[in-house]
Image (tube, rainbow, N blue to C red; front, side, top):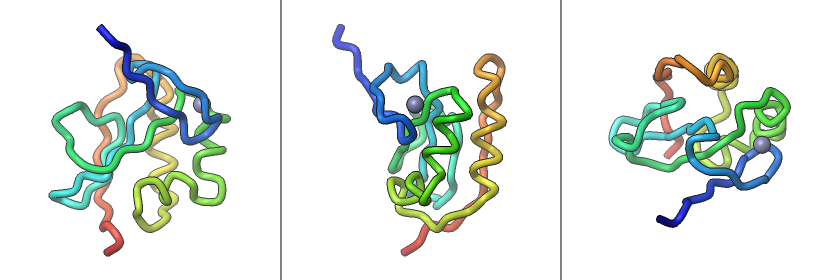
Length: 99
Ligand SMILES: [Zn+2]
């Protein structure tokens, strides 16, 4: 089976899906879902479970450019809460997509 690699929005390295935090702008609801599973459909950005990568990804609002959403500081907080890696609950953040 071919391993699908995702690119980190922070350090730009490529890792497998399970090693990254997934951030999806769900297209149907306009919600930003952190660490969402594959049932979430929309534009996605990935970042390593690493505070440095998260800082980099949010620097210059890079992550919001990938997601095509308005910058919002509360998303960074949610992503940082995800760095526990194990036992991290799906974090749903209500955000409106920029049209
Ligand atoms: Zn990274």
